[in-house]
Length: 558
Image (tube, rainbow, N blue to C red; front, side):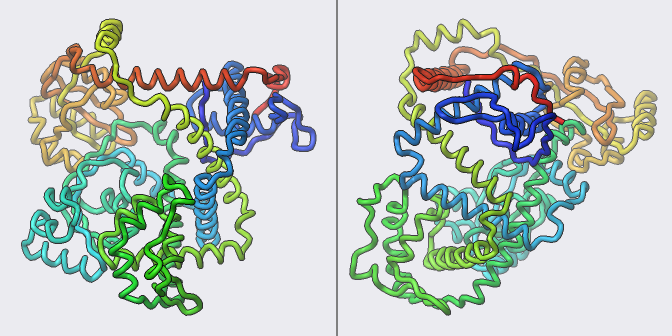
């Protein structure tokens, strides 16, 4: 089985009796050697990112993955998929992002000293869901005007019809719905999990334009442990670091924008905006290079913008649009958005130039980021060439029903409990609260007055319905408790809580129609896995793979 593992953490690996100068060969395939050092580095990162323990079967699995990847890279090279336009554009983007990150790290003083409190706050956001809405503005001043209108009685529903061209956002009041950590644009994400519920944010700078945001609800799942925190700590640390780096980059970009002093030809901007759909479509990698054409010759040579030390024509700008994402291109709704994209691309080029002047292309973090980016892109690309040919089949009804009959015992809605909670800071407080409840005190009243989970306290401690999995370590106890039963004190790391079971829903089997979509999804995934495994078997045919199990077994990780 091919398993792609790209570690983000930096792990110090010490090999007993093994150095770069005295590397031993663990495996050899297609002229490539996997040394004990390479294997140990990969394996240590994998162990650090999972809860699995070192064992020989796991070592063999990871080594097999590395062998498969060598064969895949060889196959991609044979087909020219590691040097075509799509690859070169992607690698250029990966390299640029690595340079920008490395440059940010050179101007941040505390890259390695993020306070633990900050990481715990990030962990809370990581385990939360937010419901929010926003209004878009072209400039910071316009965003402030929108906030003033809200403060003076206007509603998001009213203003959304004026600020959004997208009919969905215009008609739903700019609703973003309910989302989790990392699912939105970083600026929206940060605001949604930081400002108090019910408040209106100050103008938020987006990648294109500005926004004001209102968080309508935020639900935090605190049924997690310190162990859960440790599992994702590295991920959280990198997220905080990336956000700090992003702020520094944005500050630097603003400074550069003032330096380059762009002056636009509004007639050219208008012409470009008029042809924007054409430009966006032809920036797609799905259009062969030889078929790509810029706007009509009579306008493509028009001067679009003049900088202090350079000028761009429409044609030169359109060539650069390929460096943007489809999502960024879709955000161009006004002429001002075109200007913002021009400025963004120009300042980015200046910043990349500064990074290259500092020699950051050889920075260890940048090199590692580019390497992982290339490997990840190539492996995903290889898998896509297989799964794209599989497609979504029209599944035979008899096959779906057969699969349902074979697995219907596993298909069920799990039982749920609606639970109320009084969350307290210490075990002593929780024990005292339990004593009050045993003497007949009203749970709802105590929850409203004492629970430190404020959003639940407003609801008399009610957390809502949840499954055993949602309630974490005490899930089974809560699901098995009777309605009206009080459970606790229980540790809800780092706090303590007492619970009351308010209502229960029995689990029930899922019918065939309720299971149809998940069965189709399972069969489609199985078909894709079979296609992948068959392709790997074909790659292995006629290839000599030599594995030194003695070396593999005796690598020592410290």
